[in-house]
Length: 201
Image (cartoon, rainbow, N blue to C red; front, side, top):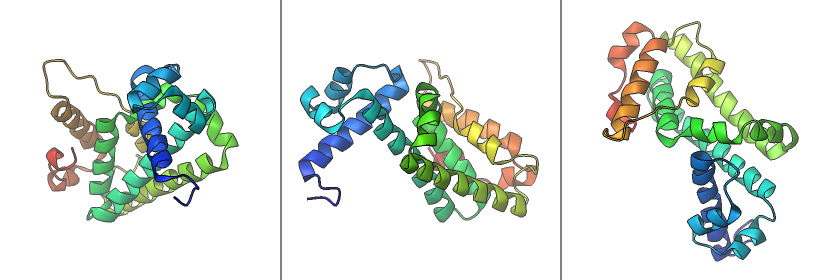
């Protein structure tokens, strides 16, 4: 039995439901039916309601997973990349590729209001903010990020949504647009040093 008291199968069902909610909230909004979430997760509606008694509980769980994913993404980038600019580029490419902006648009202002009243959400959000602020500070010190760009600007870039045509390969198109945007906030000398887009998509 897991540390949270759930059996392995119950934990697996819960994780599948949350993962499906993240996808469907991103693609269709938070008004998607609970049955559709259950079907997507390949569990029964009864199983869904045993884990999440109402839509509010599911939104809270999905929001926590969303913020936790951001925290893991930015801290991993900071740990694995050789400098702050490379970490920022990697993290922002990942945000665009995984549709962070679409999810944020679907859950706001619900998520913002929940963060205020949920200590768990507040804690993980503060982890994200602190990690981004640290990267921005380090990139300024390196001279690779424009001095007028702050953590708030980076947060807005995290939620950029990029339309791709049906006839183009979306991963490459999104990477191309993000490279253009990032060239706008980086110091000119850093553009030549930055890694190719295909290393972060």
